[in-house]
Image 1 (cartoon, rainbow, N blue to C red):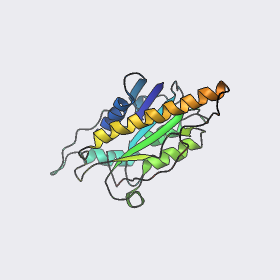
Image 2: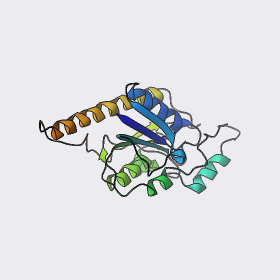
Image 3: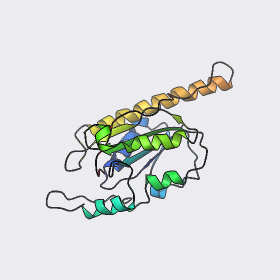
Image 4: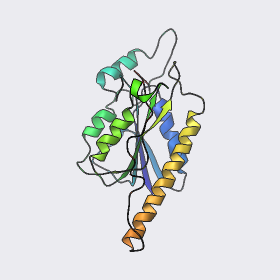
Length: 207
């Protein structure tokens, strides 16, 4: 199974989560972790696509919020190194360049503060909604991983990301088995989970 985990990250949190999710898939699958700025949206050679993004101003980052996050990287209370992909373009722009139809299994995650999604935003949900219009199969509801007030990953979130990656793998493998049986006439084809908009959320600017 070929898996691409494409991410956007400002302070490295979403990048680290993408790497942890990749480890959850295990070494017996071809897993690529790549910044969306370096991924050609018109050259897909994958079975599973996972997209991760930080939360800026209650949604996906845009050029103005990326500049604001970069300007706020070094303060009296916080000192953040910018991720190599921080300058963008990011997930918002990348989604607009996708082909009009995709035959993939997908999942999405974001980084956010802990308040409820309805209060602080949930950009992974935006990603899933966009991708569903392109004909994809959604493996699981969009997920959120949490940072603290200093925009550092909360303890245990990398482990949770690895577990989530392992769950994505199980769902993708189940779906592939079902489809294979359907093509062989031994069962009915179907999508992985078909579940879309789950909950979790994010806040003003998370990385």
